[in-house]
Image 1 (spheres, rainbow, N blue to C red):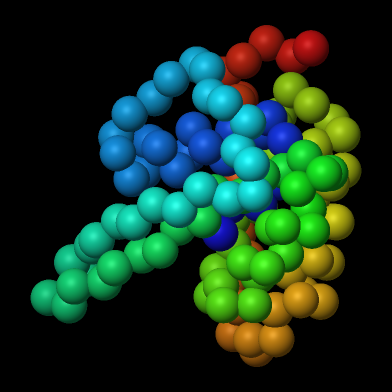
Image 2: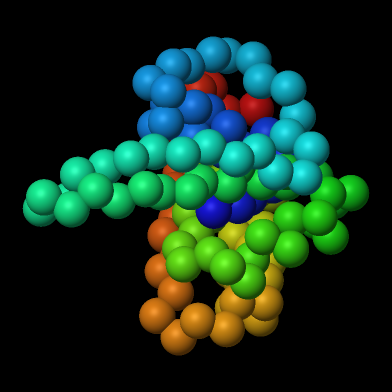
Length: 118
């Protein structure tokens, strides 16, 4: 799962990883967008199911339905937006509360570090 506030670049990360494409403009993700990536890890084919979630407040109730089956999350924030960094605690707590896997992996991604600060 990719989690974080709206506009932090979750869709950019997912598109770049899954399709090796980049665009400066993305439409707002409503609820969640699903993508797949197949990897070969030490001779074993692994199919990753990636959810790019909507970060807007109005979609947070929809996003929570993806939490329970996830085994890992990347929490994203925008380096040019301090409020998005302050929301990292919210997203981390959400995952801890709504996902009951003991070995769940959470990673943090700082995005847009190439952009000028607002």
